[in-house]
Image (cartoon, rainbow, N blue to C red; front, side, top):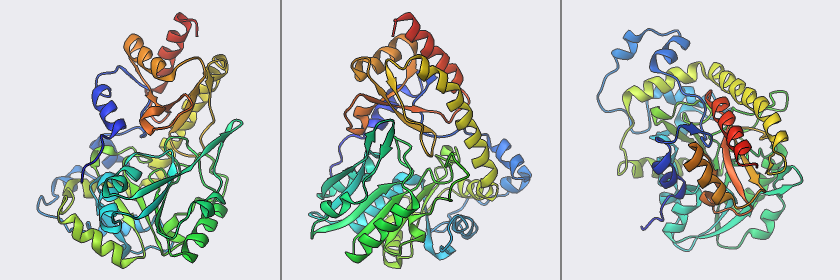
Length: 373
């Protein structure tokens, strides 16, 4: 298998740890091990007693049980833990797809959700989100026109990276009904689930809870802001797929880090507290950003996301690649151009999940003032 460069990761590899102001990050505010244990009401002694031997391939049973509580129909036996979300994506695509299969993928999305399938030799059809007025929209009925006899998989990313769009539960049910009728499997990337910004609306369903012919992806990195743990998971009622992924994992990581599994378990035990904290940070940063975007409405168009800590901002003041390059070189501000998603239209990704956002936004405002934007 020959994989194309992961554009986004290559870009961040060059700039993420050198740029003074990070305004493109897709995760939420992290915390120290000490802070996490204090939030969980746990002493460090129990963590220090963690056994540093091999762990179970499928994941520590106490962690899998805690993960299963995030879903309404999932049991511990339906959970398979991985080293981050990326390993789970890679392993699933390799056990489920073959050369010549047809894959329909929501777009724009994180590159690996279609690039691994492309490397296997599958044909990819993009199912595009569109910006209508000030909002992103997703036409569920288009799926019927995209399906072919050889269609094997539909990939959705909900909530969506990078737009923050959230597929309504009623549309998820439509997708589930249509794909089940035609025997098409659904891979649902749900790494931002739990970070829906409007808590007054109906709770977002996981696709794994509404269709047995599917697999849902979760991770500690995004909504929980604990990327350093490198813990992700998949849940599914399809035992055959889970078993195949378990056997494939024997050739990737075999098992996960024991300390990371312990800390992920502790984090999920207080997951609601962490999500509440992170939602508050995102909302506060959006409140800060609103007057900024109003002030610079001649060059920016933005839709407030329904969920998650990121938005896809449209730059209408010129070439977006040049803009992102200039603000990085001249002001040390890291933004992510839409070309990293193979998406046209002058967009860049901005992240609202970190406490340092206000400082970066102030720096960007100063830059725009100096250059008369």
